[in-house]
Image (cartoon, rainbow, N blue to C red; front, side, top):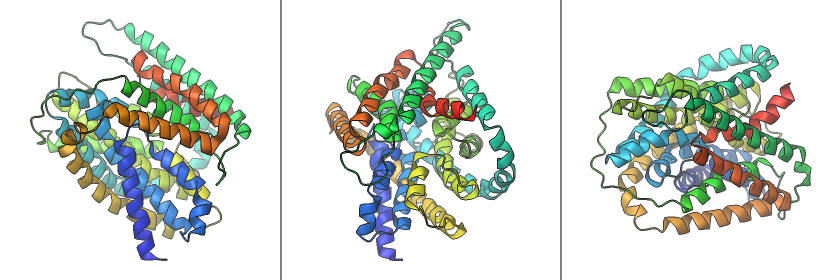
Amino acid sequence: MNLSLLLICIVAGFLLGVLSGLVPGIHTNTFAFILAAFAPWLLELGLSPLCIAATIVSTSLTHTFLNIIPSVFLGAPEADTSLAVLPGHQLLLDGFGAEAVRLSALGSAGSVLVSLVLLLPLSVFFASVYPLVDGYMGWILLAVVMVMIYTERGEVIEGQGSLVRLKYRAFATMLFLMSGLLGMMAFESQALMKPIITVGEPSILMPLFSGLFGASMLIISMMTDTVIPLQVSSRLVLPRRRILRGTIIGSAAGSFVAWLPGITGAVATVLARIGVKEDYSDEDSGREFIVSLSGVNTANAIFGLVAFYVIGKTRSGAMVAVADIMDGIAFDLEVLTFLLLIMVGVSIAAYFMTIYLGDRILSIVTRINYRMLCQGVLTGLTVVVFFLSGWFGLVVFAMAVPIGMLAPYLKVRRSHAMGALLLPLLMFYF
């Protein structure tokens, strides 16, 4: 293996993760699908499948560190960080936005360590029980969906009655079903995709998720003015005990759901929310919540790779891309160890990059036209969807956008739009 070429691929993946994390609307899965689509061309250029896989895992892990920055400073959360917006923005309004970023980076970095500790016991456990669990997968997914909807509390308003939660649960159910029906239509008709540029097997997930979680967020962000108050301090005030607890809870939730189909980090945050009780009168509660949610996303990225090795199933867009690229090549323990080592190394760089940019993001934000940035990304995303999935993909993309925009207007979590994947899976298992 050409080590210099491998290093270039890892650095390229790191930079793509920084880009996808900072620019709203570009999800890590977008780059994963694009790399998978262009894999035949990259292989002709001399890159090995392992080099391309290294780029994808580097991108996916780096993204989990950096994506907190637009969520806190720009008000542009994606599904995986949408729950962190309220405590993150509260810290921003109080002048502690940089501290929120540092807490998130610490939660992600700590999650890497916790995941390495949990790696062996969880691998042994799921390797032995997965055949049994697989027989009840439909019921498990249904239980997860019910927990997601039941725990929806909507917008917290002082003095509101308890019955108002029923309204938000109804909204969550509606969003889940609408996205689910769109997902069923898209999967059943994906043979209609006729890519303009055919460089690999087209995936309906790209236009579907790009519309639900990318373009919808960009359009809302373009209609929102970003006003950032004067920032006071980036010093951490959360006790070490609560940082540790938040990291462990988030890592446990993210590592557990990585074994289940259709359950992404966005859904795992709901479980972390149960573990870390939100008390908006307690500033430390919000801080611990940010640590926990960051741990969810990083652990989920790591265990998505481990689950692919142990049970041979892909549980994320990034791992679907890796599986396509590694098709015909043994994904053995040596490959797993190699990619895990890359993730650990990249996490160190991502941690320091997150803190560096978090401390300097104010000067960066004031120099760019945020609305123009969103317009440019939206245009580029639309072009990519059209060329890689054709007119049908563009139709799915256009239908997904208004559904994805419903969540913030209904004041419910974006993660309910994962019904686009969960409902088809439920219909499959039942």
